Image (cartoon, rainbow, N blue to C red):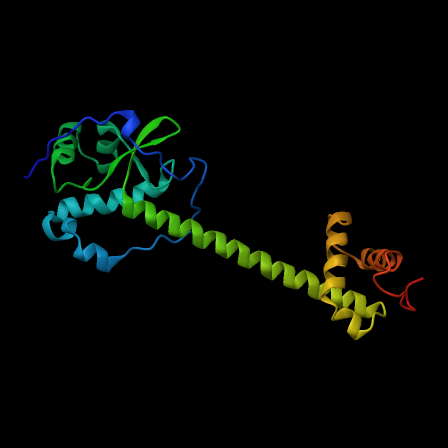
Length: 209
């Protein structure tokens, strides 16, 4: 087994992990597995099947850690995660082609952890895609909310050209968001029209007195 010399690193030389400890990946978050990159890596080409399995297990287990994407820098904890004894874990950590290949020390709120650049990139990608997905859901919610607003205003007598006024609809929606915290009902829409009339945004429709 190839071994490598472990070199002590001072805390001042260790980089801060960029993801906050409270950031979590929920069960629906998808972490990409880049199989082509994996099959081209030295870990796949030169490590034993046992070590490859351990490496993949650590990749998956790091998603459950805090901060997400890191591992404890502790032989006893790592040994427990890989179901080996601590002496075996120490040997694996010294090996150039062990399951912790390319994992390096980092700091998270003063705690020393282990990070892997590829794992970090994959976690950041998953978090970014989650943010985009959340924004997409917000956009859908906004679309449905404005659709209901237009339908209600139409039933209250506002003309089609008024309903097509994006600025007006936006103003009324914003006013409703500030004044109506629950489900919007017809009295809320009537109040929105009255407010718009009072502000001079629109003329009073015949159905609203």
